[in-house]
Length: 524
Image (cartoon, rainbow, N blue to C red):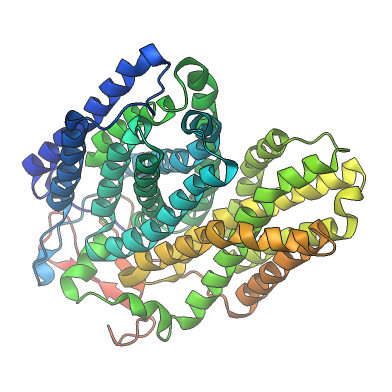
């Protein structure tokens, strides 16, 4: 849980890295220029083909991302001397790290949020049916599932910092989604965008867990999870409201280009986790299958149940709820109103959840928000669409409160209960399970809505797994462990719970050595 080596040494091959960034930028700029050149036809590029110059620009983007990705991976040199000397940490450096990683999550959340605002324009330009355009969120969410698995695992193999930088480069490259002349090309680039977005969140939580001292760390992470989700949606909606009337739906992708460049420029202040570096130097890689081996089995099953239950409620039930409310016709509640409530309620919900998580109980807070979600669903099952407007409004608000708390808690909780060796893998698994609800949640809820009882049946259907998930956390959930800390200003001691069977036969605590600045000895 320490900030690692001086920033200048964190990119092993800086010339290669910036060459790759320059190539990627050149490819993106070429697509941007093509988009600007289409102003004479109201930025409608569907009648254009992929020119040879655009294909060359695509090759430059791919080559640039590969080169930069290779450049940021630290060479593996066995032995305890391979770990870099930890840097002195200060309140300023920690706050700066929190700010940068929060900005990274904000950019990350803007990518999938933008999908909701480009669909109408994309459908009109490509002359698509409703079923055709539905492939866009499906492909993008499938990409986030794959990205969560791939980048979560990569964080445990090549490092937290390297993975964040590679995901940022993919963010940069996939802004060309706004210049694809065909719907198929848009689907491909949006799938790659989803892969980049899917990996950022679990990796950031792993780095935060290992870089901040205990105490308020959990509260900071819970607040960060909720507020960046809200901020990403609001930023995407604001850009769409201002820019789409001026330059069409495509501009929303290119408008995010400056934010991604800022994120890459801030890389010098993103450290590698010394806990990860020390463990990487001391031991061999632990396979991903360790998630399902003792003593991690119960943790993984509990986290999976909690994430899956949220995915079914959010991606399945809540996604279809606006249309059900509007079809009822008596409540004057639009989809826009529901989205507004969703964003607004996330702020106090996450603040309260962070306080409870820190001051009371991590497990208890997760159970409370699961219970709130179940209570809202069961109330909705009781009153249906025929209830009075105040009751229905209060029920919908309670549903948003519960689900906002669940998603804000699951990422930080997962990062805190797993050992360093598989922390990124576990975070990626939990994120993938939750987002998989976007693939099969809507079809399942559609079937439930078609059954006798309609919304009532669907509400009970999704309340059941959420109730089981809350019960699983209460009965078998793990309690996050404290992490040892050194005095302010010195290199923190790296002490992580590491109970991986078969990798390190150590029960309880595994203490990694950390070299203090200016000293020749070690501290354990």
